[in-house]
Image 1: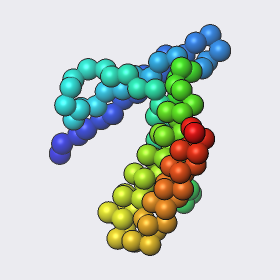
Image 2: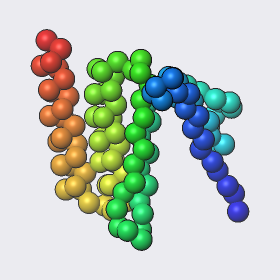
Image 3: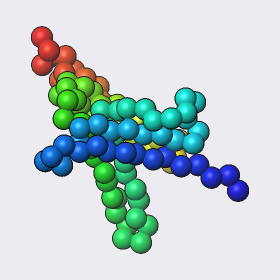
Amino acid sequence: MKKSSINFTVELDQNNVPDRILWEATDKPDPGLSETKSISVALWDHTQKNTLRIDLWSKDMPVEDMKRFYIDCIGGLAQSALSATGDEYMAGELNAVCERLVQHLRKENQ
């Protein structure tokens, strides 16, 4: 059986705030560690029927980028929901939220 792994390394400052976030994966095209400014990992606990989440961002990630990251995450959830369940209504509603948030950011930046 093939195995694949994804590893995160988080470097913290003296206040335990993420300074750098590094990641690597066995199936990543470029080998070795790559830096990112934010990660969001969600795990489904089938026993408790709830979601466990890990959300981290480095202290130098711009707020504007963080907002775009959230919108991209919601859009990714829309695509995953459609692929996993075939529920076009759910995917459409999630995408509609993304569109409203994009419009909100545009107004903020005017």
